[in-house]
Amino acid sequence: MNPTTSPSALRVNQAAHRAFTLIELLVVIAIIAILAGMLLPALSKAKSQASKTKCVSNLKQIGVAMAMYTDDNQDHMPYAWWYNASGDSADVNNFHYLLQPYLKSTVFKSGTRTTNSDFATLVYPCPDRLKENHWRTYKTYNSGTPGNPWKISYALSQFTLVSFPSAVTSPKTEKMSAVLRPAETLGGADVSMELNHPAISNLGRAGDNTYDIGWRHGNRHPDGLANILFFDYHIAPRARRQTNDLILNFKAK
Image 1 (cartoon, rainbow, N blue to C red):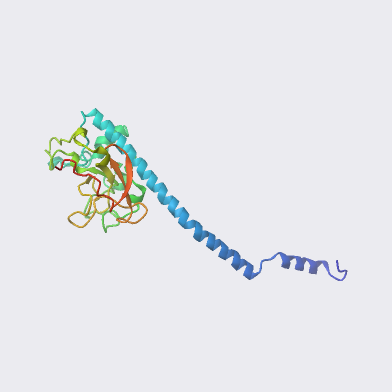
Image 2 (tube, one colour):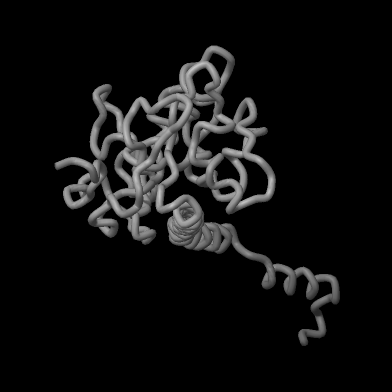
């Protein structure tokens, strides 16, 4: 130690050696920004994959409930939706009502909007669907808004009904034995915000230039994937350009 150096001066010199320079701080900030830029896409992809996995799980449980319902009803499949004329009620006119006993001990209640509805409980809501507009260009539902007052995530094939419109007092459905190629026939799927309805009638564009199926996973609808539930109860992701081998109307000759 230099005998002429005072203790206070020595402390100042030591502190100066410990402090970061402005350039060093900028370098550290730049490195953190680069790392964040590398990690955020990976985190976003992981989050998207988790949502897709949750959706697959939901559809698998719906498929199990469908199988149990079919077993309990002499091989007749559940309807997706039917119109009950003057007694029309969302509490009973959809497959959610039919499958509820296999998923929960309480009776299905549609409620007045998503926040108080069984459409948003159990296995019925898809996380990615809940982030979309309520219906088409309508971000939220308000009194007078067209369409259903709930965000519906999944739909079944409308062709489970023997005929449509069905008898208002007795909706008859097809038997599972009528599906000759169950591993290729769509039983259910993600439903699009453009339809927001429990019944799928089209694999491609409908007459009003919208899609029944919700091609939402991994990309914005209709450029993402949809999880498809087949009548042999397996699940497969498909893009909208991968439907040539799918069967929807299994009664077509």
